[in-house]
Image (cartoon, rainbow, N blue to C red; front, side, top):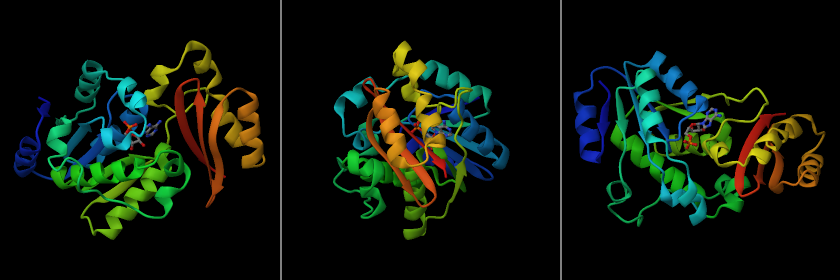
Length: 251
Ligand code: AMP
C-alpha cells in the first residue's frame, strides 16, 4: 500500500524505517509521462521509491501562474500506485517553511541567466525547496528531468557545493509525437495554442541560429522571453497565449 506522508515528521519517521536504498522524484504534481519516466527509472534502481508533490510558492514569481497551476491529485495518486511508488510526500507550505522563507539557498552566477533573468528569485526558490526535500527524504538517488536543464545543472552544482550525500540522476526529456515537451502547463493551453506549441521544439531544432529561432517564433505569434545558445545547448522560453513554456535541446 502506498503511504501518503503529510508532514516532515511523518516523512522522517518513514525514512528511518525504510530498509535498503531510496530513490526520490520531486514534482509539483499534475503528473504526465515525463514524470512517469523519472519514476520508472527510479523504480528500477532503488529498493524504495518516494515521490513528492508540492507546488512550491517560493519559486513562482507570478502569482497568477501559481494560482492556475494544475492540480490533479486523484490521477496523480493512481499513477503513483501503478508505478510502484512506496510513499508520497505531500506537505503544506507551513510545514516546509517554518522559517517563513527567512533562510534560502542562492546561487550567484548561472541562476541569473536564462530563466533566472526572466523570473527573479525563481532558482532561489527551487534550490531552497530541493535542499529541504533532500534533507527530509535522504535518498541515495534523486531524479531530475533534462526538460528543466538549467534547474538540473544548478541542483548538481548545489549538491557538489554542500557535499550532499546523494547522486543526481538526469533523465531525458519526454516529448509528445509532435515533439512538444511534456509539461503540466500543457493542460492550460487553449486548443489553438496546443496545435501551435510544437513549433517551439521544431524551431529550436531546425533554425540555424538562436536569433533566427527567436524571429520564427515571434512571427508565429509567440511572445518569446529568450532563445539562447550556451555550452552546446539551445534554450528557449516563450509564451503561447498566457502559458509560459520552456524547452532545450543539444546543438
Ligand atoms: P515539475 O513537476 O514540472 O516540477 O517537474 C518535476 C520533475 O519532472 C523535474 O525534474 C522535471 O525536469 C521533470 N520533468 C518535467 N517534464 C518532463 C519531461 N517532459 N520529460 C522529462 N522530465 C520532465
